Each structure stands twice: as C-alpha cells, then as structure tokens.
Length: 520
Image (cartoon, rainbow, N blue to C red; front, side, top):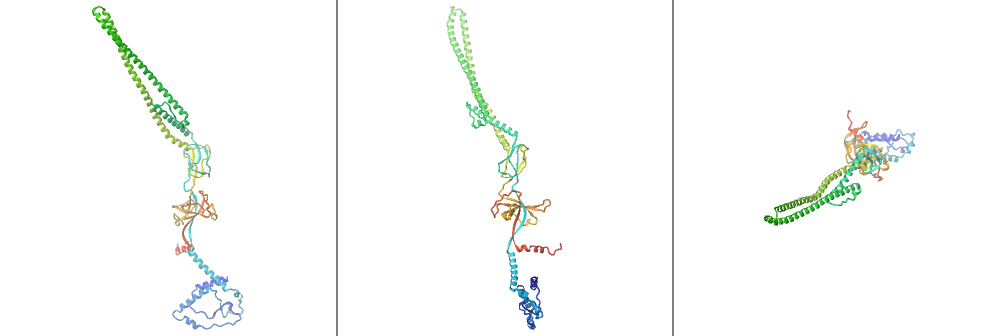
C-alpha cells in the first residue's frame, strides 16, 4: 500500500501543473536517515530576496516552469526525500522503518519498470506478425465422385467391390449376365466365321482351283464350319466335273456320228460314180435295143437312191458338227457359269462378313460391358448393389469411387467480415483435425478460388465458399505424408499482410475513435 501511494504521488508530481509561487521556506527537504531526533529544530533562513530575484525579469515565469518540470522528472526516477517540516521533527518520531529502506534498491526498481515499458513499446512498434483469417474447412475431392454404372440390363452374378476398397482403373467390380446379349454375340460370331470360310471357298471356286486350304486359326475357331465349307467345295467340284464329263462324252459321240455320216456320204458318192458309169454303158445298149429300157430306169432309180443317201449323210454330218460346236460352247459356259455363281455368292458373303464385323464391335462391347470395371484409381465410397442375383436396369448406379489425387483440395467457409482480407494466391496454413498440430505441424496451401456470392444454410451464418489447394500434402516439420481422405475436417489460417504488435493493440482504440461522437 505504501508503494502504491509513492507511485501515485510521483505520477501526480510528473503531470501536475507547476505552480508559479516560490518554494515555501518553512519546509526543509531532508533525508529520513539524516534526521537526528535529539537535535534541536532549525529555523529556516529568510531568502525572499533571492526568490524575488529569480522571479524578477520578463522571463521569470518561464524559468520557474522549467525548474518545476526538472524537479518532477527527477523525483519520478529518484526516490523522493521525505518533506519534513521543522516543527514536525520531534524526538518521538520512529525511524526504524526508514532506517531499513534502501534508496538504491528502490531506485533500480523504478528504473527497471521504466526501461521495461520503453523496450515493450519499441518492440511492439517494430515486431511484425501475419494478419491471419481463420476459417473452418473440409477436405473435398478435386474431381467429382465417379459413379460405377451398368450399361446393360441383366442379373448380377458376381460382386468384388466392398466399401473402402482401394481400386485401380480397369479392375472388375461387378459381373452382369445378359442372355440376349450372349445369344446375339454367339449368333453373330457363327455368321461371321461362316462368311469368312465361305469367302475362302468361293474365291477358290472362282479361280478354278481343285484344292482348298483354310487358315489354321479359322480351323481352330470354327472346325465344323470349315468342314462344311470344304465338303460344299468338293461337292460342287464333283458336280462340275460330272457336267463336264457328260458334255465331253456327248461331244465325242457327235464326233463319231460326224465321222460316220461323212463316211456314208463318201460311200454314196463312190456308189453314185459307179452307177453313173454303169448307166453310161447301158444307155447306148438300150438305144440300140440290146438292153431293155427297164434296165436304164432301174439304174436311174439306183442313182437317185445313192444321191439321197449321200445328201442325208452330209446333212447329218453338218447337224452333228453344229451340235459339237454347241457342246464346246457348253463346256466353256460351264466354267463361266461356275465362276459367275461363285462371284455372285462371293459378293453376298462379303456383304455378310462386313455386316457381322460391324456388329461384332458393338456386341463385343456389350459382352465387355458385362464386366463392370472401375473408371479410375481411387477408393470405393459407396456400394449400392450388394446382392448376387439382383436384376438391374441399364444405367443403374452400382457403386461410387472417390478418385485418387496428388493434390488435396479443401472447401473453407470464410465469414463475411473476413472475405475482403483474402485473395486468390494467398498462402494458407492448414491444420488437419485428424493429426495433432503440436506433433505433425501444419500443411502449406494456397487460396485457389473464392466464391462470387455468399452461401447461407439453415440456422447458420452466411459465408463465402473458398477453395484451398495443398500442392504437396507433406508435413514440413516431420516429412510425414498423411493419408488424406475426403470428409476430413480442418482449420485453415489464411496469411495476410504484416502488422505490428502495437497496431493490434491500438486497433480497439482506433475503432472506438472511428465511431466516437455519434448519436447512434
């Protein structure tokens, strides 16, 4: 209590106005330790003349003010002597307490307090700290959650996906069975292989080959189809050879007939020559009457008969020659006809092959879609179909996968009062709630995006959605790389401009000053 009174008295003496009156000569400034209680009281000397001399002149008041200020400053840092009026110094005064005080120690305390305040003010005016905007945040995936869907209707025959499983792109999560798709694929495959084998057979027929060779992969894929096509090729080849043999036999028969008819014609011609010679001999005898006229008529009849047989033989030979030429043309047309038939069927087979190849891609895709695979690397966050045998429609969502990402994105909620203090590109310290900050430290991030409008949910204050990106999610203090999953809570500190400690201390005063002297 005594110390408090001394400090109060010194502060009053420092800031109190200095009186222009002269110092009272009846008060003697003495030290408490130097007072002898048994010594007689001394009377103050009369120095009115000196005081009047000091206060005289045009600047006497200024000199008195300056002396008073010097005394006030001196008394603040130096222990003030006890003002002891001469009339109050009596032998009954107890100076035991005064004798135990140490003026030097008290002086050091006051000096230390003053130096401390000076250093504190200097440090507060020079030391700078970051202006921090704190907001709550949550880890969100930088990409949208990938849904796993079935493109075909059918029944689920196998499920390999489980909640929380780590999957990679292309992993089979579900297997769907669709009998119609499988049947269509098998039918198209049969038609495709048949068309391919038919094309090989028809090309061999068109070329007039007698042997046919099918590729080994085709034989392995469709041995029955290859056997059928080979049998068809051999059957058609036998039929073709049969028709050719018939035509050749007919041609040979015609040739022999032609030869016979030509021989008959030649024989008739020789007979006709002999009969004409006989007539030349008989005719003079008939004219002379040595032979009857009937003999000449008989010879003429024989001539006409031989000439008729000769003519018939020649006509038959010409007809047979025409038939032989027709048979030759039939032999030629036989090959052409088989080639034409092969060409026509080849066009149809090629068309069928093209159609089956076109359908093959679509059907293979449908068969491949029966295996529902993971669309990306990530973690399964939800499984909607958990029953084997469940019937699903095309487009049904079977599961959800949260994609993996090297960078971590947080969705922060910045209050309306703080949104003006942040901007895109500012540094951010991220403290994950799942990891102790005192042990692991904070992650370094950057403000990536600030919403252009505020958001207000039910029973909550409005806020601005701010996206924070962590390029390298590694704790700088320990080098530990945490396993960060979407949904983790965090606290983000957006680092703003530098401010001094004194500025923070004076901020309430400045705010009060800005709203002072207002009615409302």
